Image 1 (cartoon, one colour):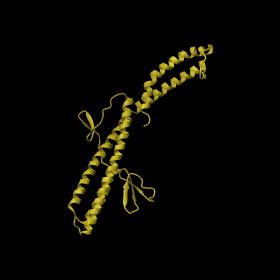
Image 2 (cartoon, helix red, strand yellow):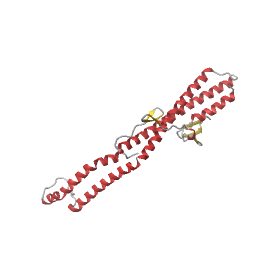
Image 3 (cartoon, one colour):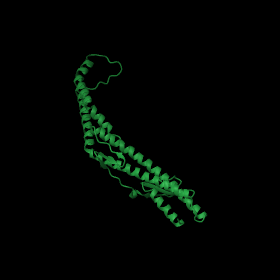
Image 4 (cartoon, helix red, strand yellow):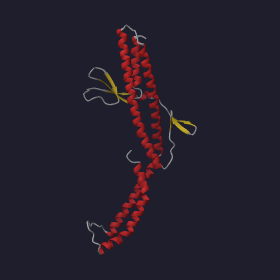
Length: 250
């Protein structure tokens, strides 16, 4: 292998190493070395640029095998249970998959960095020893390439899961809206009942030790029917409240 060919491999490897990185920052550090990272460079760096590499990503789609769908080796869950539970599970999965994807990106970048450093050292040795190469360098490079291919497949598989989850979540948009509307309706009815109670019986602002007098007994008689209705309404709306709370914060 000539020095020129080795330089070409170095360039291609750098591009391949960033093939799945999404938004990648490129800058030159204080030692004059070019750095790549998904994280922004240190504030001490005056100039940097973003490298858009999403167009190189492998595409994997859900594949049906028997009665189940798979993203690569991962079997996708069947959507069972009430809509609130399904929506919550999908949202949790999407967050976990995105975190997993970021970890795989970071790991792949690290492998690429080590691979490029190995090629650079090999290039230096070839120049120093007039083109003579070490057999261990080639084996080391092959192992890194295998690692990169494994990361490629893993990341493609995660992307497949994320797209599937997003599609399923969109299919449950109407159910999610209905859950919110049911909760808002029950809260509206409860608030209306509370306001009618105040309008009919007034407010009891007494604090501390309460003297049970005729005025207090009259207030209790007035509020008793409302309190029973409020209690029944709270009990009936409890599930709507739980369902609504389970799909919030995403």
